[in-house]
Image: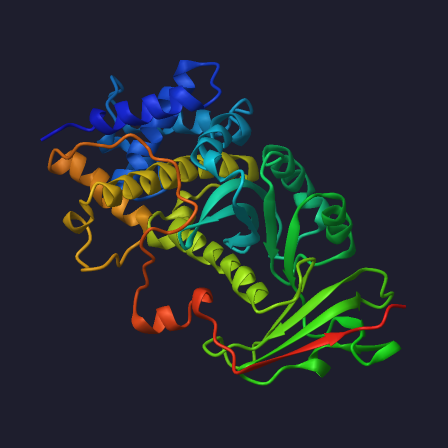
Length: 394
């Protein structure tokens, strides 16, 4: 049996090569925290002790070490994690990149704002922020810095599209997007007023234009909200397979087409990320932390584990060894879970860990939990008909 330091050594090299670190003690602490998280699959600070080698004699000593790390203001996402993910997507500069903006709640008391990169049917964390806020809807100023940071990080990427749900569409966000080089697909609420579909000088709520099941309506040059000042394109889509009476109203700067709903559907990869973080792979809500900055740093441990294990899973797939850890004939679990299973085998079966591979632009082998899930996937949206409308300018 190969002891835990095999994974620790791999993580230490991984972090030392790419992260911006000023103190080796911080690097060692983060590597051990990721080791404990991967093997225990719990974000409970007391659950990591069996997997960490240290001269400390008491469990409380380990816990104090982790708490010092989480309380340290010098530990930042931009220094420790961003270099890792930028190295992983470095080959995407000339390819379409989808960024998903979304929020998730913790204990109905804290809100985590995520900006993630869509990859292989999943979302990979790029940047995040935690605030004490009892709603999943947040003001533009709360996430503007994340957008500014992402815009700077992706300045060499030629085709970036921001995807966001109804809670984010607002004047401030559109003003920001119009000044950026990014494309965007944002969902609107049904009661949003739009100008143009009924003729010049008239407005109506989006619900008045609701498409039928299997129908898509493509509007050029609609005016948004009561003032109608923002002009963009609107796609109303009700494809087969989505929830009943839940059509999508998507505004975009892209030409209105049936490709827009498929592109917007990539946003739902964030839900898989939240599931992996909170229950599917790790137990974020078991951390018992009640401090926004500490939660943000704790998620750094999660993000490193997610990225490292996803890259391990991809390497296992490329090496043709997937079926050693995936019981399905075709790929039936995510690269993250393939990677977790493989890494656990490094402890219990002596498997060799692979050097992390860059993330692929396209999924080498898409996977679905069931045939029904495949039919409902954003990749397989089906329409019976579509109509195109050109709205008059004001």
